[in-house]
Image (cartoon, rainbow, N blue to C red; front, side):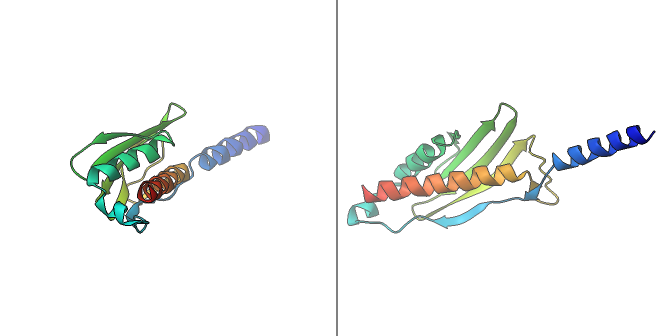
Length: 138
């Protein structure tokens, strides 16, 4: 009986440990870097769109157009964890917000999700900022 109880406790601990959650991270109103030259001031909305797509592709994200200044990004990790985000942007700033997810323990009422999702969004944000900086410098 003791062995059975120990086994049940171990299974419960492992199940709880596998269901980690953290507050949902949305990158809201992130400013693009200041233009490095006067030529950067002539960049179009389409230039920013292309930079977002290039930056995301470095981390495995794919994008669909959803209208001017709006992309829907998707990423699938290890064939089973899926995230979808809205990327809203203009020529001054962008936002990345959760749209949908699978197998990431998303709890909409508590705005909680698996911490790996937050890492993916943070990495996407950094790659976008790096692409914009390169684009503005060129």
